[in-house]
Image 1 (cartoon, rainbow, N blue to C red):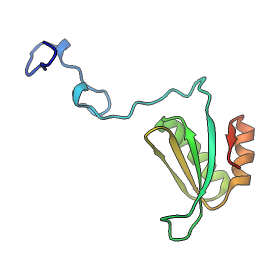
Image 2 (image 1 turned 90 degrees about the horizontal axis):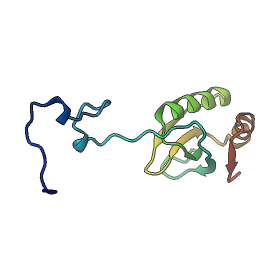
Image 3 (image 1 turned 90 degrees about the vertical axis):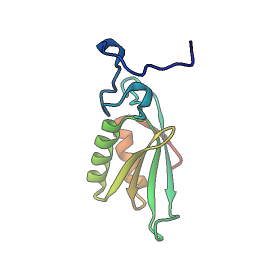
Length: 120
């Protein structure tokens, strides 16, 4: 019977709950966190202006989909550049947006961290 689902059970091993959203695993829509250790990725730079009222934003794309990693990296980049910004998790990759054209400063920071990049 492949087309069936468990409706009710008192057995605790039958109830599989997501640790972050506390929903059943079959109903969970949580984003799977990628591990950063040993992961090789290439950061892609681009400048965007559309939909931002004429303001330029430097976008770093191609980062791992790990919320803690993106949060810490964006915090460090914003502090070292002295500007604002944000991070978000896209469908395929993590994205960091830094306000202004800060490509030269970001290039130096990524070189110190040993990260590869393209699109400069």
